[in-house]
Length: 396
Image 1: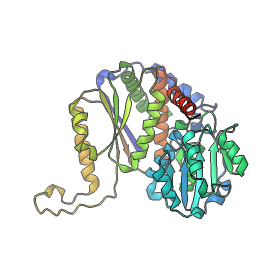
Image 2: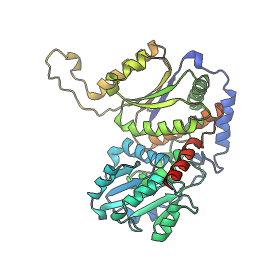
Image 3: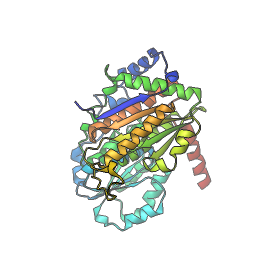
Image 4: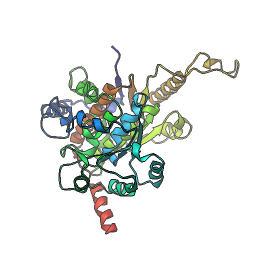
């Protein structure tokens, strides 16, 4: 049986940690508490979404879906959209920045075609509220809007009540960057025409005896990198455009969860093979203070290459685009091994809901385990909150 997602760890031998008892205990503790209300509850078989698809059917007539949110409220939906783009028929626009040009493009669309999905855990996210105000002329109302936020006295709840807008509760015990398999990611996924139940098919895979070794070894070795402080950067070297936004989702998850208490490894997004011609020299021949996450997709359907250069490029004869990219990736991995640079290889064999659900669960679990091992709280973001407070003070 072909794997949907394959993860291989190639870390240096001297980074390996012999004691796996502690990490097994952490993973078992997470598993034993899945039914409780915590950040990992979305993995529980008892987990329930706070909406019924029957309540969303009245909104399915819309052809253009505008998703407004910041950070973890939107990055997961963007990752799903890019990864499964071949299955999605409707037009999606993601507004996750203060960018006038993005908003101006919306004004060119017909108002009657637009559905707005507004997501903010706190209900008070500044950028999201600013964008709602800037889009006021598009007539955001009860017939064309869904709001996802916590059930408490916040700005979005008041806004929804005032305008009688359909509101879905955001679970208060699941933070934004851990929320992709909750309402936050599954409501947009429903409007993408995807099977939201299928996302959950493989999410418990890394608790099983045959697969837990992958996550245990990786978390062990990565925690050693965090604690030694010999590694400053984590390069997400991505060979597939379908994985671009998944890499961005990983970047936020890792940076915001583990970058605190003067600890952290900077996750850097890098596109391949484009960056073979700009950053590769530094990556391979510069300071050995980096580890690599090498993302790729096994794409059986690929464009054939027509050799227009006669015999001078005979090695391209009967090749396709995927074979060229795969050759470049394998050459890169070979040099990493030769230079004794640690890396993790993430290969997607099937682009479907099950695969991306497994991807989300793996990285969330790994991040939570590493947080415990390096003694940081992976669920808060105190520096971010500090900037938010000062921003509002500056505007007052």
